[in-house]
Length: 275
Length: 279
Image 1 (cartoon, rainbow over the protein chains, first blue to last red):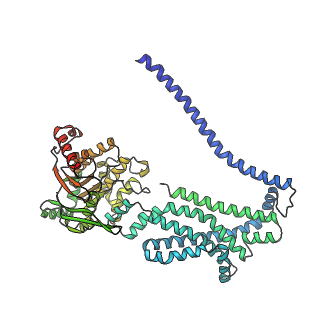
Image 2: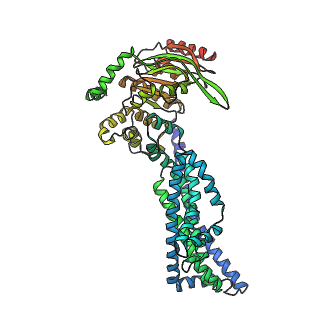
């Protein structure tokens, strides 16, 4: 028995060891690939952009080369950052305001079907009006300052968060709900110990959407009437045929929504550990 | 373990008094007469339970066996006071079911463990204390006893998604026991587990029953589980749910899984099977 089993086991063990080494090597290769390919993709896009501008001899006021945009960002960084700060503040305040309002309204809706049936259609109707159409109304009412931009940013965040949070607050495991009834839990206890946690994954997927939406809202608000902010700069640069500045402003706004998104994604990872 | 249980009883004179009051109900923990439960769905009424009468002795382990649609789970919800019967009368510990539940005398174990995935094992077990406004910190001794009782010592800080199905169900049993209930309702608690885990938990729930002297109503689909666990088996027929038979289990109080190979058990299982075929 031993005479047979020993070489067999040895063989099995060695082939396993080779497989493990191969497996680890394969995993390392895949990890490298995950890191390298996105960088290659972006680099490829920038090279293609540059090649088109250089190859067709496109004038800088129509479309600048990536190097020129980079140069402009560095040269006019003070101006850009100052405007970015204004837009970031508007977007952030709008984000906080809109989402808080949405969570509060969702809480009310979940506890009162009557109010939900009464007011949800109004929320749907207001959401159906495009942002660009809502913005002038708010600028007329609230003037040229930061307030209308904050409100517009809040409004675009509000709806997705409202719908998702209502769905999340209602997406409670029915057996856990029955357990809470067994324990004679109050509605407040059910809300804070069960519903709120059940809603968190839904809330965060809405917040990811809201993270980029609030920047769009603030910029659209600035287009209608503003003297500062990335949106105002985009309009100004377009009128002046200053396309390097226009592109630089666009890059800054993209960085801003990217930053918002990353912050939300990190928060989600820290808070929603269970799903 | 027994010593611990006695200690908690001695520490709580109010509990002992309440226990004395229960004796007035002729030793019946649960008493139902002609329970009927009707549901209305799609504009027609469905009779889930039709005229169910049964008395459950204090400290009895009663298993409920029956095919799907026999109203087993519905009956547990009536006993829990979550669902008022359409007609008939029921008392739990000599009181209305909803009152017994509100007193914390009735606890429920669900088929899926129904744990909150964002809470650790310990936090899940302490949930009933939080809901009733008691400080979990003051009950740490009791919680530690329960962790030992259900074999979870060392896993207090694990999250449910790190546990196996059997472990999760142990957590939910501990959570049900934390409020010192007198009646434990179990709705197919081991139905989703594999047979090996199920056998082990069957032994453990028998042991827990003996140590805590609880009254247990245990719903199951399994003939073996019903026969091995119960002192009596209540066989229900379906459509509408009604009592088909009540069978006393001829096994000794102290049993091991080998008891399922005894001739008494084999003939009991055969009888239950024949009864179920006519349900």
